[in-house]
Image 1 (tube, rainbow, N blue to C red):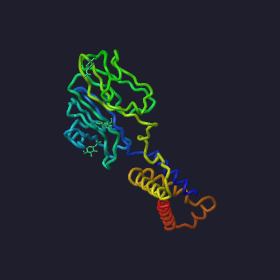
Image 2: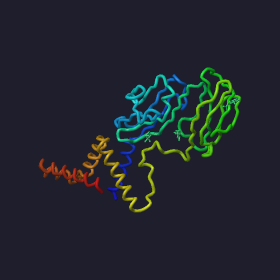
Image 3: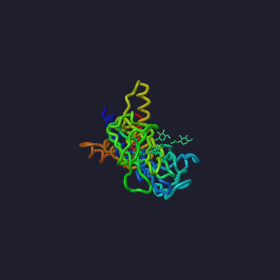
Image 4: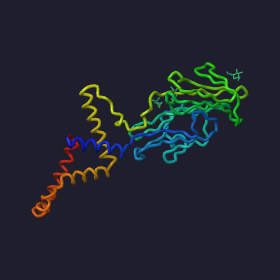
Length: 285
Ligand SMILES: *[C@@H]1O[C@H](CO)[C@@H](O)[C@H](O)[C@H]1NC(C)=O
Ligand SMILES: *[C@@H]1O[C@H](CO)[C@@H](O)[C@H](O)[C@H]1NC(C)=O
Ligand SMILES: *[C@@H]1O[C@H](CO)[C@@H](O)[C@H](O)[C@H]1NC(C)=O
């Protein structure tokens, strides 16, 4: 019982201390449509830079093309495209050496003179969304028409429109049109349900095992993750575990003077070995 709670504590702590293997892709400026020759910066916001996160993209011409090697200029965990072109349109994501992936971002580059500024990341149900229709040449707002899935939804003299309390039914392909300048490319607006947990380490989203078998598999999975964290990523944590363990197995109270007197160095070493064995068996529990 005590061993189990200690293990749980260690597990939760290891998640908190070493939570990793997640990345979030962001784009700056934060929009998914750009004019030709705009400068764009993409960043992998990662918890663990040692996982080797790389920015990749699929375009009409490239598949899984890596930043720095095949496009853009790599700069730390960011990637800069100084002059973006329509051929840079595509889907972008971060990928770790082990193949873990971040969210994806669709980027569309237009050779035209109108863009729709819509949220890059999925919008949460119930939130408000504001769409802006912008031209390349005029900084002020011009009257614009907004379309969803090909049908006119609103004409706005101010050039922007807000959808209040979005629902799943607001999801779709949006574009806008400014009569003097033309039409924007279309962009998807995705609406997600409840608060998204994609940014948390997966194991904290504890599933309810459907059966005992799943429960066992899940435990194995947890153990695998725990061992992996401990072995690969948390040498400090291993030291802590060892120290806690040594402390727990340390002779206590009245025994101390006796064992000090009675224990020659070889027996002390033997004691250490026992402690190591205990650590190993705990991990197999
Ligand atoms: C990129 O393209 C490859 C090959 O077509 C495909 O398997 C993969 O799912 C694509 N990735 C994304 C994020 O669209
Ligand atoms: C990216 O675009 C594709 C269609 O081209 C769409 O199915 C997908 O949902 C979009 N992804 C995002 C994150 O907007
Ligand atoms: C763009 O909007 C103008 C009015 O604002 C309209 O006359 C024109 O037909 C629209 N173009 C398209 C392609 O919808």
